[in-house]
Image (tube, rainbow, N blue to C red; front, side, top):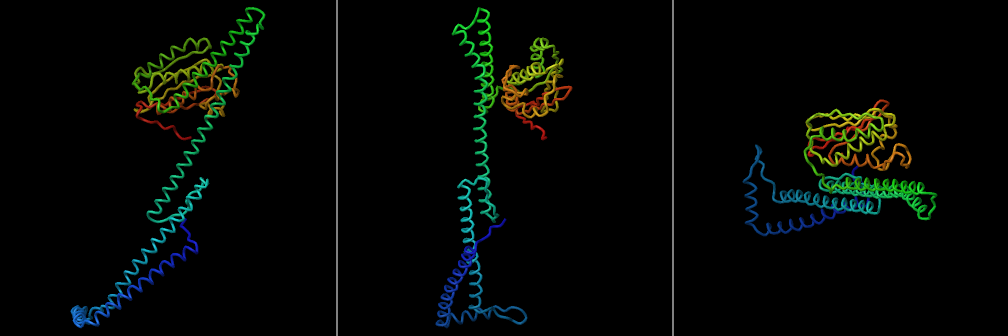
Length: 384
C-alpha cells in the first residue's frame, strides 16, 4: 500500500511549497526592479534591447520577440517550478525517512513479525525492501537458533534417559556383588554378565552419539574417492550372510559389476551396514533381504535394501529418521537399538548430496538411497 500522510505532514508539504515560492517571488521581484532600473537609466542598453527585439521577426504577421520583462517572468516561472518541485521532493523524502525510522523502532521494540507495509518510489523503496529482507533474515536466524537450542535440549534429555537406564542396572548389579548379596558363583556370573551387557549397550549408544555429532559437523570433510559401488555392496552382503541365516533369512544382492561413484567409502559402508542390520533385526517374520543397485541416469544411482518382514506402520514412516525414534513406541531396548542408526544414515547420505526414501507395505519394506555419481552434483528429493 502507499504511504498515507497525516494532516500535519500534508501541512508541512504545503507550507514548504508556499514559503519557498514566496521567497523566490521576493527575490525575483527584487531582481526585476534592479534590472528595470538599470535599463531605464541607461539609454544605450534600452536601445540595444529594442534593436534585439525588432531583429527577430516570426510568421506572416511579422511578430516580434517578446519584451525582456515578459521573457524574464517566463524564465523565472520555470525556475520557480523546478526549485519548488525539488524542495517538495526533498521534504517528502524526509517524511518517508521519518516513517521508515518509526517502523524500525517499532520492529526493534520486539515486534519481529511486523514488516514495513507501505510502498515508496525510487531509492526509498529499495531501502524499505532491504530492511524487510534484513528483518526476515534476522527472524529466520533467531528461529533457527531456537530450534537448535531445543534440539540440543532434546538431545541431552534423550541421551540422559538412554544412559541412565543401563547405568542404573550396572550400578544395581555391581552393588549386589559389592554387598555380597549372591548365593553362589552362578549368581555372581549372572550379575556380572548382565552388568557387562548393559555396559556394552552404553558403549554402543556413546559410539552412535559420537558418530551422529561428527556427521552433523559440516566442517568435518568427507574423504572422497571413486569406488566400485557394486563391489562394496557385494562385500557387505557377504559379511552379513551368516547373521541373516541365524535369523532364518536369506540375504541376496543384485548389483552391477562396475558402477563407479565418488563417495567416502567408510561412511557409505556405515549407511548400508545400518540398513542391512535393521532389515535383519526388525524384519520380523521375513524370509528375504534383497540389496539391489542400478543407475538411474548419468548423474544418479539408486541402492535399495528391501525385506519382506512385518511392515512399518504408515504413521511411523515420516519419523523413522528422527533421533532416538523407535517404531515400537517405547524407550526399551529389547531390540538393542540406540535410535540413532537411521539418523546417522540420513546424515551421511545428505553429506553426500543425496537423499533416502522409505516405503512399506504387506509385501516389502524398501529403503531407497539416491546418490550422485559425482560429489559435485546435488540431488533434490521429489516434493510430496
